Image 1 (tube, helix red, strand yellow):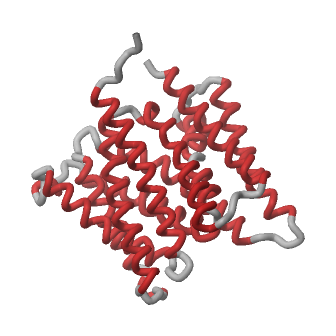
Image 2 (cartoon, helix red, strand yellow):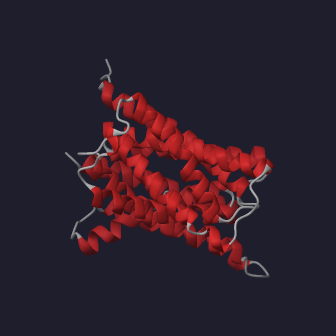
Image 3 (cartoon, one colour):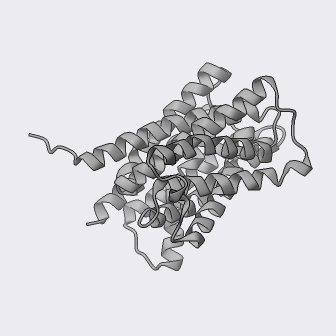
Length: 297
């Protein structure tokens, strides 16, 4: 007879799967909006519109406006800055890459933590985890090879991959800050201040030129904000209920969403070598997640 999952853990897993689907819808909206709108404008709309479901969530929880009070303002600043930079890099990557390849780069986050932990925290990860990290980095090389091996250098792909790697690094830092904040801060409060900081950051780019917001572009911008706000609430609630290492394997369903959208909306699949590289990154991240889960008591 199998062991039943504790209700809180089961809820955390369900919320993480829901968040993954909502984030996938958000990335589709961002990709479509990026045809006309610059990164800063997309950041503003994604974050400003996201405040609507976040405030509604706080109100339903009886936490608005009282829930905006925080005992850790500096923690919110750190989390929001890391998250804001990660969002900018993510949207830049999405504007140049197919959804599946951009999603695969997001899974570099747990791999990039390993060398940092060895150098600065003096941790000693197992051999399997180290080998998995190296395989993941080889996967990035495979993703870059089609652009570098062609008759002319595809700078768009190089920029997209570079932005994706930078996004993975800043996302890893943001997740650590989220986990620290959930010890004292309600999830809705974390989501509110993150959206507020990113909205202000995006608005600051307006003098550098924004596209006209009308028609389909406006619809995609609003869609990115609504799905992003709901996804962020679900993700923060999931992290508050279950260990990050337990939730990590369920993040990989993002690849299925991304590949499905690439095929159905844009009619494309990655070239075989890029697809192999994406598979190596996702597989390596899964190995690291399982290895970390077994290492912890």
